[in-house]
Image (cartoon, rainbow, N blue to C red; front, top):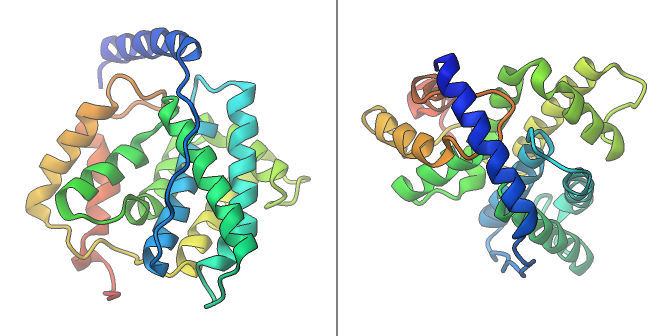
Length: 241
């Protein structure tokens, strides 16, 4: 992406962030799915929404606070979607996390993982959290120092990582924790429906939605985004049915 286009995109994002603070959407109740696989995907979807909001370049103190609340709630409630035991308290915590995470996304604090997840969902009807759980860790690693401080803050304030670690290590440990949650939730390590022939169209749709509005830490063009989706082909992973 050229420097001129990056400057244009950042200007649009700044103007959008100003208007966003004037016209904030109202909170709404999201209906949780009943199936365990769908519930696991919904939990990962909420985690993605919270983390992408936390690393947004136009986040506010209120956004940071909500992101911490969402991740804290999820870390306490994921027992309701794995291990075979569901209980009313865990489901209530998950419901609260999903509602808060949805509001962050509605306020516009989105990132590339969400738009890629949405594009794959439209193509194959795969729950967005499945794609996001695979894309987001690599995306965060690619952001490098641009995302380390907000990720470290999120990790410390949720108690997920030892608060004495430096930012770079804390961020890496938090990303590893996210990957562990995907495995624990029983979500796959690839998108079995994904076809090489479809990737270009999926990426183009995702990029069209994300650019120039999404306030991501690092700007990527459509070609650069392909590196996060191509590894999810079934041919590149061990199959999990």
